[in-house]
Length: 363
Image 1 (cartoon, one colour):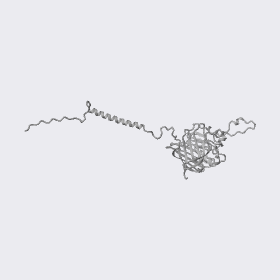
Image 2: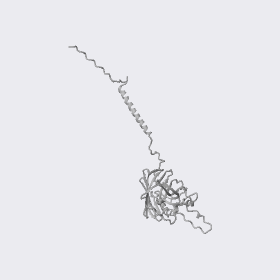
Image 3: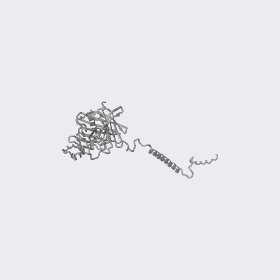
Image 4: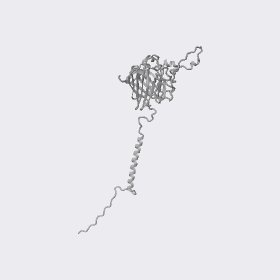
């Protein structure tokens, strides 16, 4: 038998193809690689967060001090808590028989309609103005439809539902609506408008007499909050939303019925409003107080409705008190039965809210 060969010696294990660095434990090296990967991931996330923060902001500015306020077109301004109570116009005292007039007879003259550099007579029938009188409005001289001459019949416009394009500083908002209903004995006036996504609604209702409107209830609805005032022509009193009472004689109006009262006066006697400067004085209530208000005719304008030009008579509410910078304007058009073709309110900060006639139901 051939001699037995010894077994071949086992080959030594060559180990990993890429040996670890001298003096470094492979487990420590793998741990360091994971730490580096995690640090890179955190750095990428940090850069992404920084980039997101520096992205441009929203289209609506954060600083809303210059954005339009959310009060309704022709929104009533806030009023002082203590309303002035109108006093009846003093009757002229008879002149004494003596040749020398009594001095006390000249101490209480009847208040003028409005202050003006030309005097009360010029303001009532002169060249007119833009509603910048410095003095507060005087109480109405008589409850016969807001200062119209005696014998002038109030001519109520027929029922109508009118739509208006709404603009705030020239930016169009959802349309507004004026709904006027009357049957010769009673009336209802509703005004609705929207500013951005908020809805504002105002309503006046009451009786109708030969001299005009006798409001019985006025309400304002703002952001689902309702406030109302009630008026009693028999007692000549108004109960405001707070529960306070104020004088409210026949012929006084609420903040929106006053415009339809003016419409009826213009329809009944259009010849009165041919010379700029004619001024009507009303006693006007809202949900907070009752105060005098004067509306002056200042001329004629042509209003662009987007569907053509409409000629209209331009009326301006005069200042109610010194430093009153809120301006209310009204344009009444004969082609619309003297109903408003445009209404504009300018706030003290310059914000303008416009309602421009778009069309009427049935026309």
